[in-house]
Image (cartoon, rainbow over the protein chains, first blue to last red):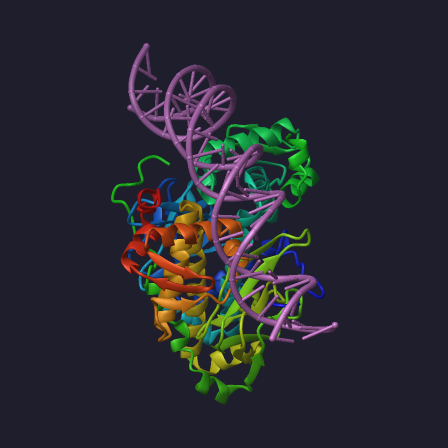
Length: 243
Length: 243
DNA sequence: ACGGTGAGTAACAGCGCGTAACGACGCCGG
DNA sequence: CCGGCGTCGTTACGCGCTGTTACTCACCGT
């Protein structure tokens, strides 16, 4: 509580390093040799699972975009992430007995079902798998903490910039264009995720567009200057450029 | 995107169920038989580890209270949690090569150091241990998502109420009094964690005190009516009782 | 053509922030 | 023992960002 800031820690969490897809090391082919995996298709709008259902399996996203959200009995709801290809879904529910969140497909998805107790057995048989699973969980934790930082320290415009930057990086990591992509989620979903209202998200997008940093046409996003977008997301440039 | 709310999921995350200490099943005694564990004392104000340092070990909190925070190069900082006895610290850094957050002791702590690669080996030798570790990580994920929900959907007064409620429940889980305890962290730490400013935290505490729900004397908290506190944290009672 | 959903815009209001000043406590040296 | 000093906590006040409300438009399937 006294003197503890000798050398400022100051470490950037993972503006890009979080993108390394852990399931790279999650070898589905090898996993399917150890257990019965189920390939499943989910249409846009349908649930992969709902909060409260008995926990049976993890899901590896093979294609498509999803939305994960928590809800309370009194009607509050919070979007906690938008999983996409290469990510492991359902890990947050391990050990709870039942799923604790809702996961909905934003468009047509293809997911691979991994029955859970069997996953642990497979880990015991394949030591590397255990490390990969643990790592995937830890990365999710880092991701959550990164967004806590973002939501706790940035204003509305900066949050939206950070959101777009994150989406761009994840698209690039999947081989898609990082400068031109389509939002799979509604403004309301984005707003919930960023702890804002959808009008504020719209305003922020308009600001960024007016500043020439991006171009918006409904759900279609073009990033004109990734560098300026990054400065908005991390620094305080927008305070000037959107004034 | 069409009709997806047939039966509202509406599931309470864990107003109390999150309290089950996962490390209950993390048998330190058995672990120490598998690997060399190190007992360490940390004085209040000192770091357990700093962001950027090479990742070497997890830490099991045996006594004391800690603060975990992320920081960025441009000076932003966010407190992401207050670990206490029975919790596992450092898991968020697994697989990253270096620690990604700062962990500081709020008072004198006693922690048990668990060298990391060795933990994985121990898991391989003791299958139950792997499940316990995975479960601990998953619980951390649920906890983070619970706070995302809290910060994203509640106003300042409600957030502070939820914070106190959480602290009370965790104190009770450790055998301490849930209705009378001492805050180990400053208003600034609380504010950072709740994505508020410290003056707002003070105001919220004053509001709760004026409503007769709690009594505040600097860092000493007495909860007069846990039920009303819970309603403030989850519902919208305070909008009325603090007006 | 029609209704429904999602998106954009504007005017207004309110919560929470920023600043400031004061008080309480602890630490230290005189 | 006392006074200075710094940190932490509290309260007041004005303002700005964001939420609120309302309306219009674009799109889409019926």
